[in-house]
Amino acid sequence: MKTSIQIELDAIVKLTHGAQYKTALKRAQQLRRNHRDHFDVEYIYAKILGDYADELPKKERAKLKREASQILRKLCYRLAGKSTETQFWVRTNYYYHLARFQDLIRVGHELFKQNPLRGLYAIAGGSALHAEAQALKKNQTIAKRYARESLKYWKQYFKLSPREKYYFPYTLEAMAHAILNDEASMNRLLKKAEKLSGQKHDYWEFKEVRSLLAG
Image (cartoon, rainbow, N blue to C red; front, side):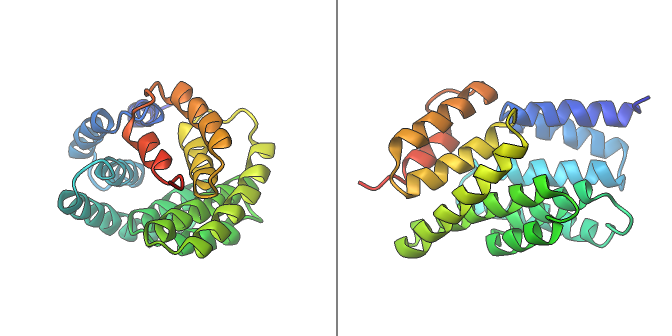
């Protein structure tokens, strides 16, 4: 039987699947006030704090990302005996919010044998995000190489998870296609992401992906 904490955590995660990060953060903050130092509560608060920060102006985004990564860093020292699923979420969010995407890829390779699905997610996602970072720096050769690497691993991921219901993997795969200037594949995947998240065509994450298409 689920505890009241787990029921609320599940409800918060469900909000993130609809990209409702601001609402999810408010509930995570309330849960944290009542259950400070609970591992899963601390994790979900830090994850959502960092995810919400993605849509904020640069200065405020940096501040919240820093707070999120500091909490996650402490949780990384408490991972002994935790499942590979928990290790995956804590470690990958730690590196994601620090924008250390090559470390995210490394974690994926480390976890692959114990949990292939999560390993592939981290490798594919980390590769797409590193490709985006390089594209924004105008390092197109490196960006395209990592985009192709990302697509290779997303193909394997979706073979294991053909009914994926979280919008973000499709968004990241679309990102890799955008960097490779494959507009048709990008649009197909963004439509899936729109449907799963309930967000519209002009949602900021989808706009950022489209902006990566070559002029």
